[in-house]
Length: 360
Image 1 (cartoon, rainbow, N blue to C red):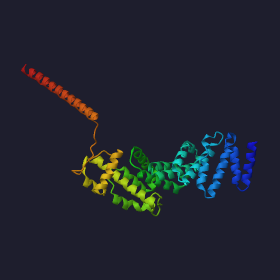
Image 2 (image 1 turned 90 degrees about the vertical axis):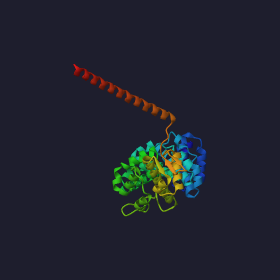
Image 3 (image 1 turned 90 degrees about the horizontal axis):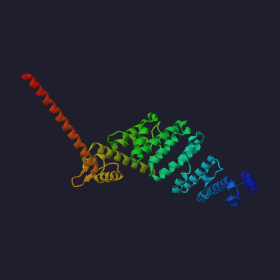
Image 4 (image 1 turned 180 degrees about the vertical axis):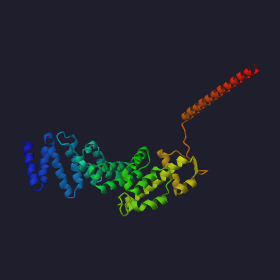
């Protein structure tokens, strides 16, 4: 009886102006009834859309959060994902980023492997990119853009494909260096599509080559195209001329400094702080601050002698490792001594035998 009444009411709602009172009544009647959970979720979504249309986005988000569609056994998977994406969208609209992150975990990314769900995939990763931008997680944004790039609809659109690759490149170089970032930037570098965007390819090569990057020369070569675009190469919104874009451009300069410090650690054992600051185009205080952050993060190993103004990049070994190394070297030395003794004895025996033969 409840099901028939609900179906009749839903039909009426589709053919007449939406009535919030009727929807609220139907939601009250269907509350707690598993056999009409799908219909109740659709009514809830419709009510949320009415509130959003009236400008009450907070109330719309609150209403949608009541739904736990991931537990509905009778609902189709596609509809579940659509409902969860609506929950994410409304959470982002009210800037409830923590809840949006939690809700995103309810969707299995394997669902998007089917090409027919490309639109839902783009919507999901668009929301994930927005979340990453709020948290400043550049590596996560890069990985999400890679998923967007692999979507069939993006692959079919030449302009979108190129713009997505540009975003992948810029966010991977913005990410702080670690093993995962290093692996990802080398995989990005191997993409043949980079041949079509030589400037962006050059940016990647700067960060994968074991050479110090001149910050002034880098800005002269790349700032115009990366921030404003040039004829035949549209700019992305990564380094747009606003507060967010300026912050990312500052972060890129910081990544250049970090790259240069890693290169110094690779080629120097010791370097004077004044020389290091000159190479980094920073003050001595700024250089010391950047170095300290990298040492704390475990990116490089270094000690600072402030009295002498010398940076020592020599890695400190664990006492046990030192002992093992000394023991190994001692064993090698003894092996060489034994080998030399054996050869000396062999020579002595040969000469002795020759001397006896000569006397006879």
